[in-house]
Image: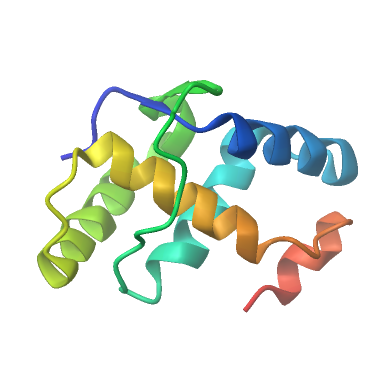
Amino acid sequence: MIPHRVRVSDQSAARLKFLKSKTGLTPNILSRFAFVLSIRDMKRVTRGSSELTGQEFNTPTLFGEHQEIYDLLLTRYVEITKDQRDPSVIIANLIENGLHKMGHVRLVEDLAHLK
């Protein structure tokens, strides 16, 4: 289900750049945190940018060696929410939503306290 490439919005790309400057973590690692923060609620994410013109990720880089787990999470999310959009759009919107939830992160230690 996971496509080979995912492009996020300009807003998400800017937020990832800002978080990288504060935490030292790469955008793909930060995107994994954001994805999981958003998907754990299993509620359909409808807000998010419709213009995905920001940074592009290869999904093996984005999800790393645990890509199969992320694929299972996405499949379950689609089953529960009945989201019919393209998987790359769903992933981008989940990342954007998760980045919004990470708004208070200023240090890498703050990631341990995400709820």
